[in-house]
Amino acid sequence: MDPDLSSIQEARDTVVRAYEAWKAWSRVSQADVDRVCAAMAEAGYQASERVGRLAQEETGYGVAAHKKLKNEFGSRVVWQSIRDQKTVGVIRHDPDRRLYEIAWPMGVIAALVPSTNPTSTAFFKALIAVKARNAIIFSPHPSAKRCIYEAVQAMALAAENAGAPKGLINCLQQVSLPGTQELMSHKYTALILATGGTAMVKAAHSAGKPAYGVGPGNVPVYVDRSADIEKAARYIVASKAFDYSTICATEQSVIADRPVASRLAELMRAEGAYFTNPQETDALRRALFHPDGSMNTAVVGKSASYVAVYAGFHVPLETRVLVAPLLKVGRAEPLSHEKLTTVLGWYEVDGWEQGCETSIALIQAGGRGHTQIIHANDERVIMAFGLEKPVFRILVNSMGTLGAIGFTTGLMPSMTLGSGGVGGSITGDNITAYHLINIKRLAYETLSPPPEAFSAGEIPAGPAPEEIERVVQQVIHDLLESKTSY
Image 1 (cartoon, rainbow, N blue to C red):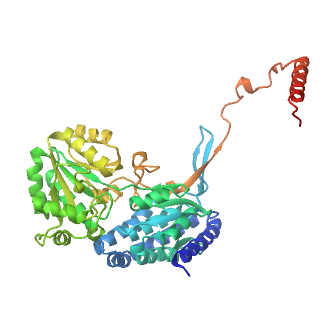
Image 2: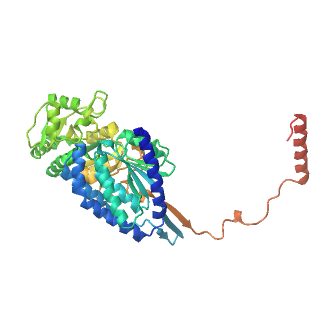
């Protein structure tokens, strides 16, 4: 059978099976939901090391130990964040307004999963979908289909053993673009949950179904003269090196306030940063991006030493990130865009106002709606960044990788970060179980009696009978004159 046709048929069969499972799951109690989800979270946590290693081996991206940590986050930490959420029956009651809010599941969810964070995203999406009483079908990235399948199977088996219907959690194995398109457009698919590159998200938004999609991140980090410079240097290097920069909220460019720039660079070197010279910077431009501006996937998620050798130069063995001093932003400077590898841009500015302008320029160049980081202790500067940046996560004195996903901040733990209307998404939230339910509202009358206009009162007088007769005769006359008949 033709591979594309086989993939399409698999998608159709899987959606029908998931829909039948969902019909049963949509009627279960909150206790049933929470028991199943707790079992899923524990299974994911226990499988974190195994599937993290599989992910690194299959994709060649990142660090196995770091993927293990992301898997633990996507299972246990995510579960802890949604464990007490009510997703069945009456979830809120406002006695003063006489209003009840009732949770209602979406149905079958199509989940697109990237190769950069494959298994942690699968754990996370399975948990939030099932917590909201939905079925879910995963369409894995072709280069990560084995590890994603293993992660999904761990969740599915745990769910079934805890009482969930078979077919509630699924993963396509015959992966193709036509198959994914069939999954997204099928009549039983209720919603699309897309995490990945721009092309994937655009396809999800074009499928004719409600979709949560996230845009690319091009996260600037501004380091103000009021900052704890030692902490900023430690956090920036560690965050950029984490899993070799495969999380979309990782720092992409440092904007250093000039009075502290030299000291910040010195401290970053002590943490393992290597600052490139003009020739090496130019080599990185050619290595990281194709002539048409697209990213070279050969260096995605690779170590600093690997990227340097690929670009044609060598760095000390202890190097963790490469830092390229830059002057321009936008089309004229490829390195000012998102770099899903261990390369940082470096800009120097005079004061927070210039830092603000450069941040906005970087965000407009490719990360609208996503994330901004600021290291500062001057609350006036911090609030200025919070009020003015066209992004929906402004992290203060935290690292991008773990802060934006809600591991080291108070943000909702999530592996899908909305970029809001400015970034082409329907929400700027960190997506969680709450986004996967509809809410019915049971509303009692609060105004009694109703406004006077709705009472019987005096009935307004209509046209006089003779006037009605005159209009009818005129219509008949006009019809006869024009030889029009019924």
